[in-house]
Image 1 (cartoon, helix red, strand yellow):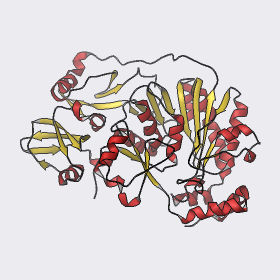
Image 2 (cartoon, helix red, strand yellow):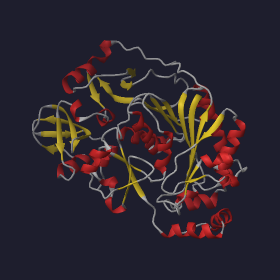
Image 3 (tube, helix red, strand yellow):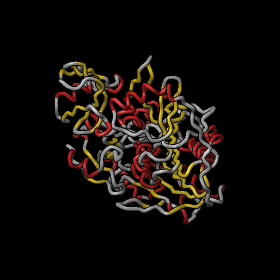
Image 4 (cartoon, helix red, strand yellow):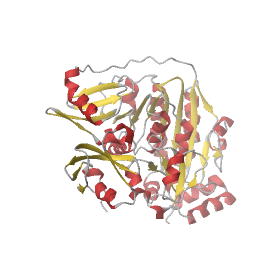
Length: 454
C-alpha cells in the first residue's frame, strides 16, 4: 500500500526508531473487519446461534465481533433484517466508552454514517431521546437509512451546524459524542482515500474546527453530563493538544478514566503540555491491537441538574388518526406508547415530548410510522423494522438460505398463499419488510432504494 512520506517521517519522530518499526510493520497486514450485533432486534446469544459467520469476540465491546471479508456480511439477509451493523472494530470502542443508557438525552454531534449512533441507540433500548446530527446533507441520507434499518425508535436526525444546535439546546443533553472530523491518519490501512487526505490537507487544518465543535458541545452539555471526544487519527495536534486546550478553557470539566484492555494504551501527555491527566485518555494503535488507529477522551462537566422538559406535543384530533387506529386494530398486536405527532399526512412517534425544533433542519423526526392517503393508512418500512414478529397479526417466515427471501429482497412478487392484507415478511423470525397478500400472490412492498442488486 502507498503511505505518504511526510506521514512516515512524522510518525518516526513521534514514536522513536524501535516503536516505529513495529508501527510500520502493521501495514503489512490487512485491516480487520467487524460487525456489532444489534441488540434492539436480537440478543448476542441468539445471534450466535443463527450466525453463518466465523466470528471472534472484540475484547473492548460486549456485542462486537471480528469477521472475515469472505463472510460478506453486507450481502446476507440478516443484514437486511438489521440484525447487525458492519463496523471497523476500533470504532466500536468509543460507543462502549459513552455507554448510553435508557432514559438519557444523548447527542451524536457528527453522526454520519451512523455506526456510533446505532450503538448508542442499542444501549438506550428505545427510551429517552437520541439526537443524531451531521452538517452534510449528503451524509445525513446514509445516517437516516442506518437508523431505520436497525429499528431505532427514539431518534431525531438533524442537518445543522453545531452553532445552531447550541442556540437551541443549552445544557440539554446528558451525554454528547463528538466523533470529530479529522485528518484520518488512523484509517490508512482500511481506506485508500485516507492517503490522499493526508497528502492534500495538513493536520493543522483540523484543530480549529475540532475546538469550535467542542465549544458548542460544552454549551449543550448539562451540568453533571459526560462528553466523549474521539478521532481516527494519530496526530497529537488533534488529540492530546485539543483536550489539553479544552480543559484549560473549561475549568468545570475533568477527564474521567477509561478502562483499557487488549492492547489499548493511554494517551501521551508528553505530546501536549505534559499534563499527567492526559493518561486518562485512550489510544488504539494498529501495532498494539487488532484494529485501526483511534483516540478517545471521556470528560465530565461538574454539577448536577435535573431535567426540565420543555418539550411539546402537536395536538391531534382522534378523528384524524382513525385510519391509523383501524390499521392497528386489524393488523397489529402492539400497544402505542409515547407521543404521536402528525406532520401534514405523515405520522411519527417518540417516547418523550418533542423538543422545540423551530428553526432547525430536521431530516428524520422520530419513529416514522407511515402516511395517510385518502381514507387509509399506509405503514412505512421504518415502522416494521422496529417491530417483532409477535407485534404483527399476519406474518410469513423464510429461512435465510431460501430462494424466497432473496427474491423478496430483490423486489420480486412471490406466489404463496396466506391471509389477505398486510403481511410482515420475516427472515428466521426477524422482520425485514412489508408485503400485501392478494389471493395466491404476495405483493412486494420492499422499498426500491433498499433492494438487493445482485
